[in-house]
Each structure stands twice: as structure tokens, then as C-alpha cells.
Amino acid sequence: MLIEEGTKYQISPGIKGFFNSAETMTVKNYNGVTVQFTLADSKGHGSMPIEHLNYLLKKSNLTQIPSKRILLSTDNPEEQIS
Figure 1 (cartoon, rainbow, N blue to C red):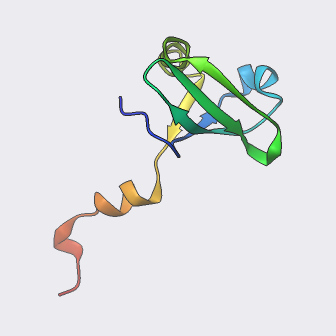
Figure 2 (figure 1 turned 180 degrees about the vertical axis):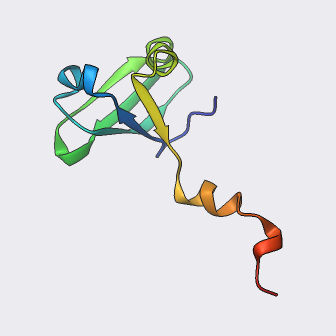
Figure 3 (figure 1 turned 90 degrees about the vertical axis):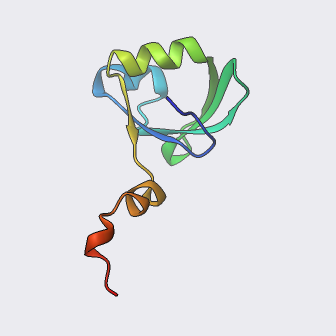
């Protein structure tokens, strides 16, 4: 899984209490060991070890929200107007 700055995650309702009831979190920095993030609606910020982020993703407590750039790059080239 590729983790980079700006990656956004949807927080599941079951763990929102641990994230100040925020709907989403956005990665601000990733150094290979820890991830720094900010929470939506200015509800805070924090950091966690990458192992914990991977655990939350595996348990479906966090779901990656695809960026618009990725969605645009995966469009079917046959549908482009020439």
C-alpha cells in the first residue's frame, strides 16, 4: 500500500470517538515509521506508528478515499474525445 502526503481516509463510525468524532483524516507526513495526520473540520491532529495504521486499514476501521487525480488517471482511454 502506498502512503503519501495528502492521502485521505474515511473513519468508520465504530472508532470515531478515538478521533474526536471526525469523519476523515488526511496524512500530512510519512517518514517510513510514523504517520502524522490532521482530522477533518479542524478537530485535531496526531501521529501513529505505521503498524497501527495498517492494522486499522486491515480491520476496515479506515478506508482510503481515492484522490481525484487517481480517478482521472484511471479513466478508460477509449472514452476520450479525439
